[in-house]
Image 1 (tube, rainbow, N blue to C red):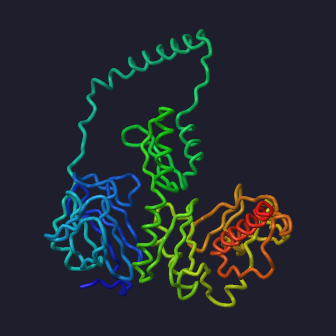
Image 2 (cartoon, rainbow, N blue to C red):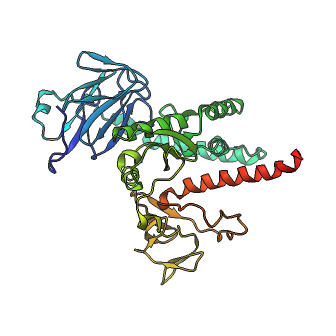
Image 3 (cartoon, rainbow, N blue to C red):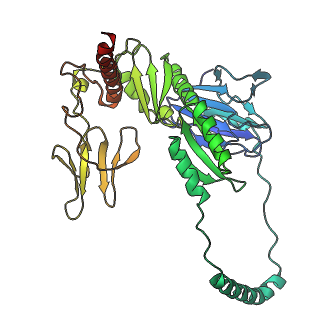
Length: 411
């Protein structure tokens, strides 16, 4: 039986019912996608035996619980489910992932009472022996003498050549290979762990080769564009919209499908299910004919995004755009979101609920200098999808230019 999420007081939860982390739980949103595995980039990290790096993808879509095996099989009841298509679950139905088990269901479902909570072992430590306390003054004295000797030794040594910080070099290499949403943290083994997204598997292989050549030891947990596009397509299919997804770089994913209007796409893009997909910055919808889905006349007439050129602080803090318009905290900045605060930096709250820093820049070039599209170019439709039309217009312009340049050669 499929569990519904209509009751306002009965929240949906995901609980770990067996394994090292038994008793842990997480409250789920109405539409949510959760990556479970042993990798540090997973939403739920399990340290149990038999758990793969990216073991399974679990989703709650429209009150339906689904699980899809990724790097290794999962077991539902007595059935082994190999990596492939998602499988729908009943409420509070255990799913075994390695040596751990998880289950979905309403928070107040009586079926939870059938599980026995396993508590982690006591981790108390023996108190420090009094003898060590008595030796603390002696240890402190020896430490002071050692520091003094080290300072004298360092003073007489010649200055060594400045060495490159491996962490800084690692960040520079990530920037060279255009790793999106990059984050570098210390791993459990002391090695730096890098998370983020790259355009393709070929880019990942080139990045790994450069790190090996420079002898930079790091653990890469990077998602490729193929993985990101697959997750986006899976989420659209879960909402009954079959699409073909393609990662186009810089966190942008183009989806091609038969969309009724732009409003359907907007609702899905603003959902937490899409926001939780790691590596996604924007969704670029297209129809099979190459068009952009339109919502209505009001949406097509939406104002163009504001280009902020300066931040004014002091007693009257405000933003100024390239057209001379002022925006104070509380105003809506077209194409960016609601202006929240102006301090050392200015921040806006986007429609998706993200807090984004506003970075001012020079005014954009005029349409004549920038080679603007003809006046009869198609409407951009939903401003959030304007990049799709811009990309298509640029491609047409390049194609036309190439034809014009090639004409003299054929004569």
